[in-house]
Amino acid sequence: MKSAKFDMPLLSRSTEWSAERLAKLSLVELKALQANAERLGEPELAARCATQATTLRRATLKAQKPTGSKPKPVVKKVLEES
Image 1 (cartoon, rainbow, N blue to C red):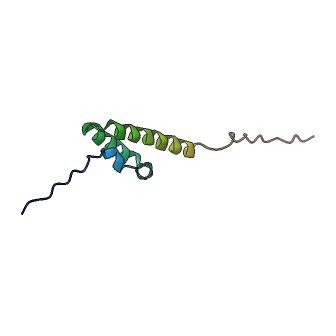
Image 2: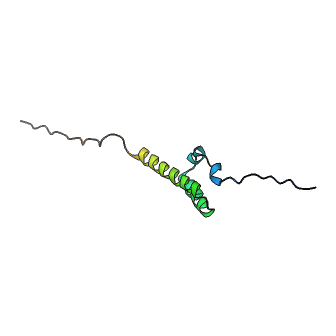
Image 3: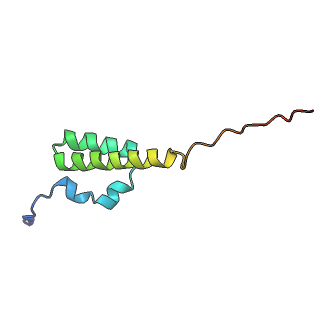
């Protein structure tokens, strides 16, 4: 029995990683995926990971910043007795 050969085009690994799928990853997972992509010679995927990691960092920092201005210090007035 002969085995069937399929002439399927080899797709880049980056096609398997949609923007939505990358958005679900944590920063640690994105860094690991980026390192793997670089090691496996997938610069497009590595660049997409770097971009998503930057977006995630900025969103995290923005969420941590307090909104509005600094609270005004409370000044207590001392009543003078006359």
